[in-house]
Image (cartoon, rainbow, N blue to C red; front, side):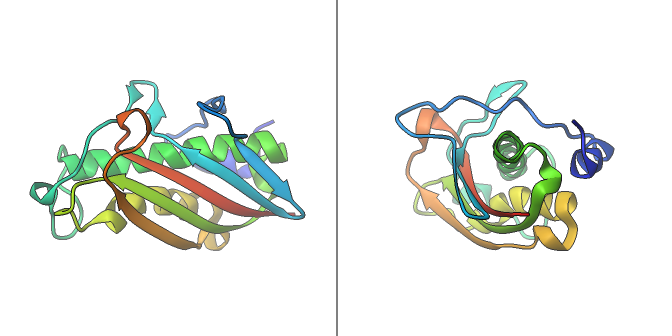
Length: 163
């Protein structure tokens, strides 16, 4: 069933992928009460896995320039968020069951010279705001990591309150 949130995503040219099977010894989500915890999702999309490591050379003031590594990483974070939402739908039956996006945590593959982790994870945060409006405003952490699974450029996990 396609609900209002998926229609909003479709209006922006986005659609949910199939919820991916876990890559290791964990479950993709856990629900306790009205809270849904979604395990970290990688930027796996129609063109495969977005990989790479950001450095100080990838710095940009303001919005990342089109075609830059920073823009690529931000788009990858958006793909992570779509993969997170695929698991939310799997767990809740529909995205319209989300009362609030509580928290996102984003990891960015980078060396010690990179300082714009928040700009990358904005790709995920902006998607949540688009999809859920005010209920998409959330707490967040954006941190650097020297490596991520399979060489991914970023990873995003989330906590959601369900109705």
